[in-house]
Image 1 (cartoon, helix red, strand yellow):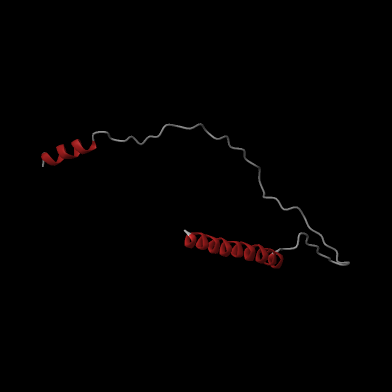
Image 2 (cartoon, one colour):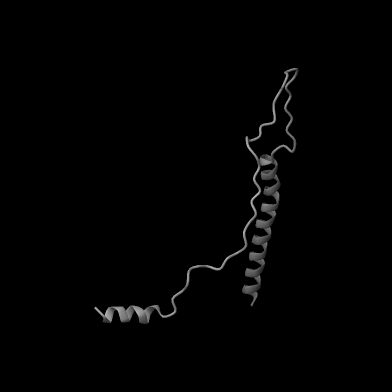
Length: 89
């Protein structure tokens, strides 16, 4: 009984050390790979011009049609029909 308790305590301590190590390691990893929250571009005194680019033509709005029943029908008597066709050969 005493062996089982000491084994449980040892496993608990190993698990706690593992969790503590992960908790200390995770913020360091997140701090390294975190992208900046804001990006600023400075064009100094350069004149930046541009136009709004749109596709030529008109926008079409298409109405979706309702759901239709499938035209594929499952044959319920496929195996008996197959055996019947083989008998005729």
